[in-house]
Image 1: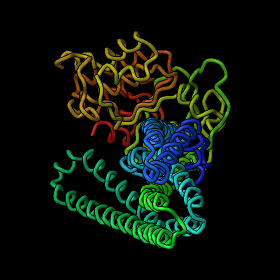
Image 2: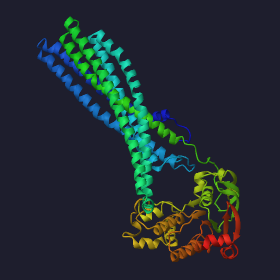
Image 3: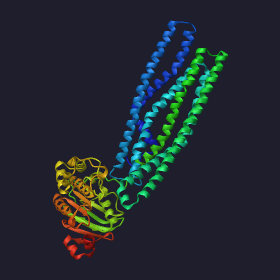
Length: 564
């Protein structure tokens, strides 16, 4: 779905339109089921008048046979309709989850702006399920309306006043039901927002659990989550009370309506306007009407909650892109010549930097913000406020973001691992089996595999927490190397690795990336020693440029940053 387009109404209509065939089929079967249900008291009433009153056994058998056929049809239609309707809801929710996943993973970014990962997860699960349920609920609503229409027609045949009472009474009841659902819709939206925020906070706290323990900040974290959880609980209780009030009010209204039908029918029977069989049919229809009204109440409540969830999904799907999408593809094979021209972004102040194709360049800065801004510019997660970044002479803003990422890989310092095997993590974006083997060796992650119980097939815990910090970094580095991109940018890839291993990684990294453009944003002397040149950033600008040995000897800022 294109970025910036859908609204809540379009999301709801899209969920139904995508399952149109299933919805129509389930609706037709549901309407048949409800019509047969409505005809049951009518057939019983007719049997009383034509069979019991006359004492005809043959007529009684005919009516009983007809009742049997009705029950067979309504039973078959109900089971089939329910199965198709539930399938339509699941397929609609699945389609929404795919659309949300595609939007979140869109190379242009923007969907995660001001949203915690847990909140996005809640939208992709709870909200998608609620919107998908519209495709399930709609056939039930259509079936309920069909039941009301058939009942009204049957009552009209029995008595015009009874039929008119139902036909004229249904529209006001439906209107009142819609009005009553407004508070439920508003409170459902608040409930979902609070639940999503609570999920996001919980995920955030769990991901930083080790840091919190190290700082002794567990009590503050618990207090923060307790407050968020209590707010979510309060919103959920308000929504539950609203739904209970909504359903209770509708049941009360329908109860009064059905009672009026029964009273009018009894009066007409006493007056002789209708027969005993007609009275039985009228009373049976009045009791039966409770079921379709309950279905309408259920459908109305589900639609109210789905509208609230649809708005939240639409907000994610319509999120503005973090960077505009170019359409140009890199011309031919990517050489890997990267150039920054007067780039201003965050703490970067007019950076001019030329990274020739096939070069191994180190970049040193003591300012973490400047390093982060440089990563954002090279990955094109944010476009510079001024200046431009080029790949082989083409501005990154003109390139298709997806195609750009197939040429340029920026591996951040805190790269997460997936909850799968170590081997699956490394080959997630690998160029081929050979690239995986060489990447494991270059990063010394092959040594990590020998220490694990199942070797490379060992399943890692969430975010690789079953590994030490150094082991995680080596696996993350192996994954980046296995991708074999023409341009690779690494940010502090060995900060948790011991010095001996770091020296081996430096040498192997240089050999594995020979002929490919590699940028190391680091202060590690072992890594910088194997680079072709080192650029020093200070105050957001380039202040020195030379080899590692030259800068260690001649540049005090560099010496302090690297050797301190």
